[in-house]
Structures are given as C-alpha cells and as structure tokens.
Image (cartoon, rainbow, N blue to C red; front, side, top):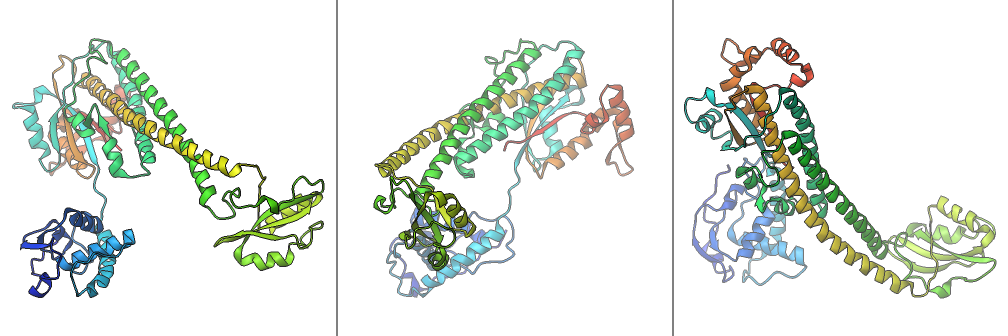
Length: 513
C-alpha cells in the first residue's frame, strides 16, 4: 500500500481562495491517500468527492510503479472543475481562487493521474465456491471447526451446507445418476453463462449494472448460497433421484428457451433500430435520402430516361465532374446536379438512358463512387419518422421484457444449478463413503487464486481417504501414485481419463460468471 503523505499543501494564502463550501477541519488519512495523493480531509460537497473518486478510480491495492504528481486540496478542486468543464462544456464555477494558473495545470494533472491510475488497475480474482463432503467418522471434534482450521482463515470462508436425505436406490442406479448429473451440471453452467451474457447485452457490458440484476430468490447470489436450503416444495426429497433429475433438467431447458427467445427478439429489434438511426445520422453514402432529395431534381415517369443518385467522396469530386459523362455511353451531358454535401461525400444526381443504367452504375462502383437506391414516395419522410418512433417504442418495451426475463432466468438457472450440485454431492458421497450415511458437507467461499491453497490443505489433511492412490514423500508432502490410481479406477469400471480429476474426498469447484 502506498504511504500517505500528510504534509500540509495549503498555505494561509490559498486557503482563503477556496470556495466557501471548503472548510479545513484537520489532517488525517483519506481513502485517496492510497493513490499517493497529498490531501486534507475537508468538509466538501458530496458530489465533489464522488467526482474526484470517479476521475481517480478506486484505491489501489498495489504499489504504483509510476506515481502521479501530488494533488493538494486546492488542485483537487481545480481538477474537479476542469473535468466538469470537459464533460459538460460549461465554464468552471467561480471558486474564488485568483491563482487559477493551476486550473490549466489541472488538465495535465488529470491526464497524469488517469495514466497512473491505469497502471494501478488490476484484475480482481474472481469468487470461487467449493463443495466438500467428508465422512463424520474421521473427526474427533466439531467437523466445521476442524475444516476451518485445516483450510485457514486467509484461504477461504467455511460455511455449513445442508443436504437432505434422499432415496438412495440401487448401486447401479447411483452410478447412472452420477453420470447424468455430471452432464446436467455442464448444461447448467452453460445456461448460467448464457443468461449472464444476455444481461451484459442488455446493459451494453456495464458490469456494475449487470451485477445488480443477479438476484436469486430475492437475495444476492452469494447470500442465496450461504443460506441455501433444499426447496422441498418444488423438489420433494421423498421422490426418487431419477425423477428429481428429470424435473431439474426440464426446468433448465425451459429457462434456457425462454431467455433465448426473448433476448433474440430484443436483439432483432435493437439491430433494426440501430439501422434506422444510422440512416438518419450517417453520411451521404448510408443515410436515408428521403429528407434530402428534392423530387423536382429527378426524371420521373419517363420511358427512356432515368436519374441516378451517386455519393462521391469529397476528395474525388473533381474527378467525377470531369469523367462521369464518358465512363459509359448514353449519359446525358451536363446532367449532373449537386444535391447535398457533408464532410465525407457529395451527392450528385445524374441522368442516363435506361438502356445504359446498369453499366453506368457498375462503372461508378469501379471508380469507388457509391450509387444510392432511391425512389420518391409521397409522404416518405413522415413515414420514416413514424417508423423510427414505432421501432424505438418497441425497442424500449422489449428491453424491459428482456431484462425481466434475464433476471428470472438468472434466478431460475442458479437455483437449478445449486440443486444439481447438491444431488451430485449426495450421490458421490454415497458411492464413496457407503452406508450408514454419516457425512458433513461444507461450502467454501474463496478466490480463484486461493483455490489451489484450499485444495492443497485438504489433500494434506485427508489424502489418506484415497488409499494407495495418495502417499507422502520423504518431506511429508502429499504425492499421487498414478499407477495405483489407474488400477483402482479400472477395477471400479472407470476409464483413466475419468479418473484424472480424482480426489480422495468429494470435491466440486464452481463459480458464477
């Protein structure tokens, strides 16, 4: 963490130049100090602090390689004013500071701090969850406390995870259920990712807004997992496991279909709206010509003649005027009329005989002049405006429907996935530890960086549950005997590939996008 600078940047001369809303209280550590910024804790407007934080970004957790120039309170205000001016186009408010030379300086400070802040930014490790099941017989004390001590407070948070008792059935059925649940788990992960992508599409990739929509049963996703209870109303525990798996699979498929259908509908209308808007705001090579072209410039209802509209790049305008009459036969001499012009193109109307129209248009394309398709329709301008308004209303309506469907889809898919994971742990626990069924299951909340440490700690403490598949070297470190592992997996009827992810206890990792 960068050390905070507590030097007094304010002198008696410039304190009086601050706005009346800035009253110096006392110096103390400020959240912005992690940016190596010298700043006094001031009684400042909330919008000022919010703006400064927005400009500088969140406090960094790493030592900066390139520090920005120190920023005192008066310069901070100037920085705020400069950024406000740039974003709104309005002149800065009169802060009473006559020495505003550093208001111009603040532009440099703004760029410097933003550049330094970009170097400070790093990717936060994603939250990862682990479900672990162990037999109760191996614990002398409270199993939850023992697991907390094994894993360590710094590596993850250990929470009890309650699993009800289900109908066990036969061994052959359990093996089949284990395979079915593995496939269903993969499908759940895919659907949850699709729903997350749909929400990102609705909010144009704004991660903060997307995160606000990830609610499960009226709780944030993390809270739902922490307080998970098997839904005995939707999935009665007294039903056979096969029926529960079928119900979960159907619900997952329905959720996937509903989200996909609504989001595809929204995407189609959104694309159509973007196309209409481009036709209103693009250049002369792409935008609608209905409000631009005067119908009196066009030859209409002629048996032999036809008028073409050609968008010519501005830098090729002279070449066009010099050569358009000769690029093919049957072009009416001196028929070109400039219809409109923008920064990139000039639109010309040229009259040819109909027999030469196709060849003329082809020659124009070869010269990189853009022929525009246009047919005058009375009232066309008003019709385009009505169409744009209609599609905009439909887009707004479908945006709300797609958002609600995305919220529902996230909740439903996470619920299904969590119940599928619960069944996986139960089935695998029965297959590994046998009967009578006495086990403890915990949910470990960790990060992608700490997950390996959690796994190493668990292997170190419980590798003996794997029999000959795990041993220890001379230094006491856990080692895996692949030959013994493969022979045991082959004896169990599993292929080597299936046993490659084998652990001596029930262990499943998962994370949400």
